[in-house]
View 1: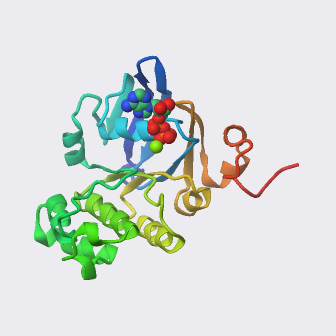
View 2 (view 1 turned 90 degrees about the vertical axis):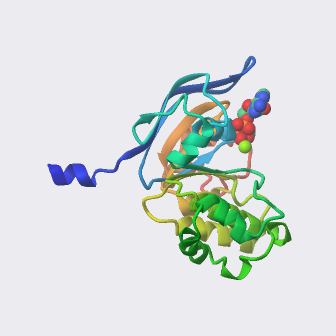
View 3 (view 1 turned 90 degrees about the horizontal axis):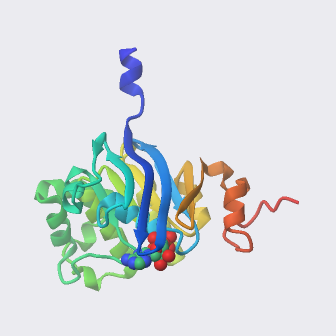
Length: 245
Ligand SMILES: Nc1ncnc2c1ncn2[C@@H]1O[C@H](COP(=O)(O)OP(=O)(O)O)[C@@H](O)[C@H]1O
Ligand SMILES: [Mg+2]
């Protein structure tokens, strides 16, 4: 029994009945789900579905209007964003938030706070050649990779990645995808991404939001046939293939 308890995956994130309102607009309503340590979960849904709001609420940039939110067993609903980051919740944004005039090394040092801690990060993300380059001199794809590395360097245990591959060319998308895929297996990842093929290549589970509600929570392999997901994307090209008669 002890053995079974040890190997059972730990719940890292637990949301119950989370809501977020802006004036009269319900950006999130009755959102409930749990994520186990090491899980890779895609978050999809049309523009305005509430995906980024969900990440802001988990990361602490915004408070939920109601509901309960726990990280690694701790109630974090009232914990400020900076402390949530120290607890191990890391976010990348739709737009990069690096210090452009600082070098890659300096950005990593600010995140990791110790030179010896950046070495494995540099190696993992293949950044040795760019350490002394100002971030603003890098191409956009490399900046997104550095952003991921910086978030990882903070020691984050849960990565909230909001469209990390948006605006990238095909080769850069592959680079980012591989970096996400190769993250240590105990790092938990929530990934917002519009490209369904990219999502399905990286996750085993998908959450679909629409109008602030969680309309589907299903294995990646069932996304294209899930009735709720299909309804949300009706008339859109995102899901491609598997048109059932
Ligand atoms: N700060 C804000 N003030 C008012 N409305 C907002 C704010 N942020 C987001 N919204 C609204 O909340 C809804 C969800 O937005 P968002 O979470 O950005 O969606 P997504 O990331 O899925 O495209 C949208 O209708 C959006 O206009
Ligand atoms: Mg968004």
